[in-house]
Length: 330
Ligand SMILES: [Zn+2]
Image (cartoon, rainbow, N blue to C red; front, side):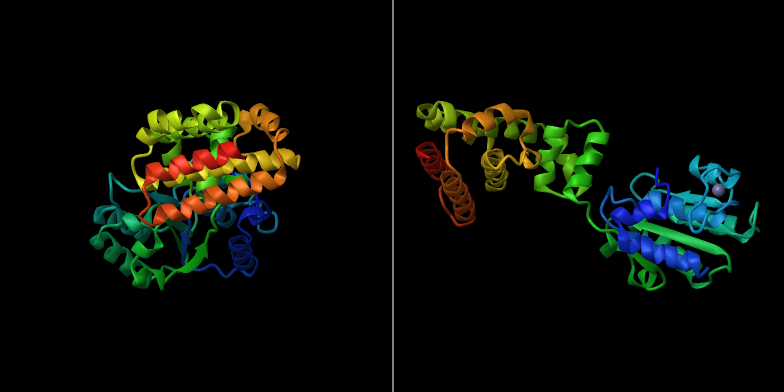
């Protein structure tokens, strides 16, 4: 749970600054559009904002989290805070109409009313038009929070009526923490966070058996090249190529190979906190003792060159054989 605006400013300084300023000056916009990737804190921010507006014992701009209003917002049952979410794949017109009917009544507890529309880009056209009318005639103390991961799918006429709050992508450290919180191992979370900083994409990779197998094959290839180099070509033929039939897949494979060689460099520099394949630390440290930094740098640049050659029409199988030969020569 997001506790304070100071806590938000650690990860989303711009958003926190805008919100704190408007709370301090008591100039709250009637509608906010919170956009950013999954996991960046949009929903938590909208709840913290709602609490700040309703809290009976606010401390500066921060809500107390203890009063009846804070507690009801936290448990999602405050009568004047409504949350709209997609019903199936979309947010439908009747959901917005229901909101309008509710809001035409006087606030149950106070005059203030808040609505939060999650995945606002999933509104059907008629729902969006209905909302637009609502935004055009704002009630004095009605506040809207529209949340989206796809701002380009929101009508411009809606965007222009909202104060934008743009959430930055997660840093890889934050993304790793979030994935580990969800129960994924630190080693696989760290690997995935090298390939994307989008929480959705990260979760897709993590639930993809192909990716888990790809990661294992990269470790096997590395081990083979380092420990049993004479078997490397056979490994490429029999195990590697069947798993990476497409260029886009091979690209991920080469990215992962790049990271495991980078890890060897970090091990040499004793920067173990940077290591991606942390579950292979022992192997990586052992191998790093048997090579030199300049050799590793050469190997890294060869993998990078190969990756860029992949974009042209090179034969993928041949390319992998060249990589294997180059890396085993060291
Ligand atoms: Zn409170």
